[in-house]
Image 1: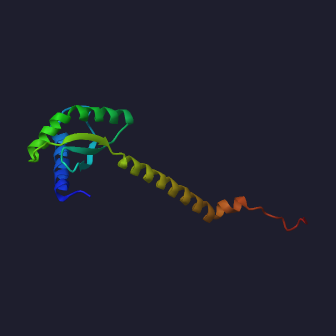
Image 2: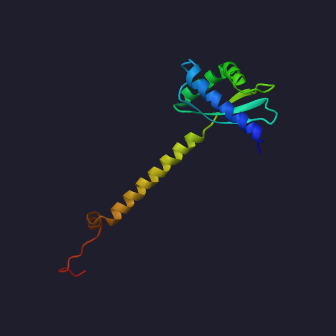
Image 3: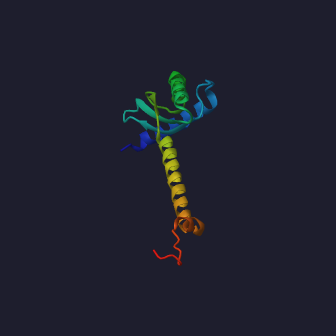
Length: 141
């Protein structure tokens, strides 16, 4: 359970890191990044910054390396924003929650399409008449 103080510090770090990435960093490797949440340690000496990166795996790794190289600059911006004895050491962690959510949505949409197709074939009289066998009343079987 986070204390109120660490939660407030985490929110301030999230806002500052997001703003810094969006407006201050000029590294072309860093694009399509969203800061999802921040976990601050109880002693406020370290913080995990969870980020979501859209794009292919190679671009995501490149972006993560760019963020790690810009960590010192981002930490200095955080130090300007929060007034604590120690500036938390930032660690960037890739958050795959958004990717998992997109994949779950894709699977659900696919299942929905399959179900709609099945219902359509069951209720369509033309498709049912072609699958039924017709018996000729003049023939004895």
